[in-house]
Image: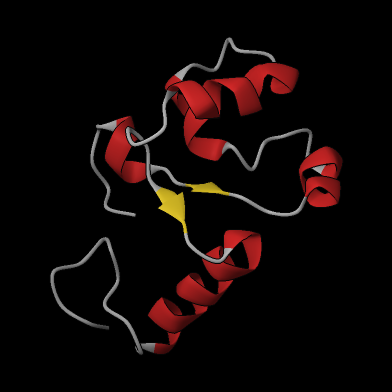
Length: 86
């Protein structure tokens, strides 16, 4: 994600399967957590619904986020924090 101050652009949410969300205490609703850190973990799914369309969602869930990062590290995809590929 680009290194900007706007939380709607620099943090993403991944939507994994329910067991992984449970293990991570819903912190994979990462953008929502940073948008309003005072919201308790159990209310993050509800907040996600309220903010639909306002915050970035990583396609492919948690695995998709890591595959995206690996592609950037390998130089197969331009890094979000640079104007040009690695």
